[in-house]
Image (cartoon, rainbow, N blue to C red; front, side, top):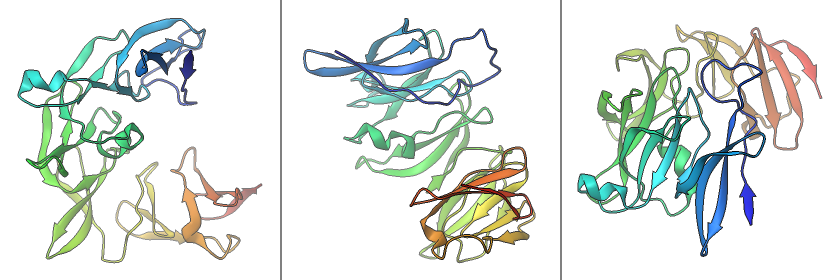
Length: 256
């Protein structure tokens, strides 16, 4: 029996109408699930041999390989990245200690802006530090942060412990701090088109507040998901499936 898992996201990089996207799928073999990739016609492109996978982004996909870490002196499953032919581009070397693969994306990010964020384990097997790698697997930003978002608009949001408190910064692709947020920002988003959601406000790259949650929104904005800006528009989704669209000045342009 074949179970298909697919995403509406297109593969990374430049695409055309002739290029078929690759979709993750899983198949049970002797009671064990293995993951691979098929195109949108159902043809298997990368055979199912992985413990878990993620969608392709910028031409690479995250994969988990059983016992691969033994080659690097690490016991257990490890995470690496493959290209669209199934070739291993970034050798599996980052230990996956999570029992549930659904949490993979919280510690091993997809490639974005040419970089991927990886949380690495300490001796006790807990994710403690975050590194940033390029598409060759080279570490470009050494471990120094507690958490980091994907890179977007050339920046990534990071958390760092200072004086027993978590501080939120933005860094560029060199690891340089480019924006420090004041205390009180707990929910932060990625920059897109020069804007990012923080708590219930939108800020620009100078840290200036551009607008707060629009007046038309429901009374409990914490129960909303705010999407990144695209073509000058951000989508706001409430838990009750109410959907709003706002422009870069906070004006409602659609409501459904």
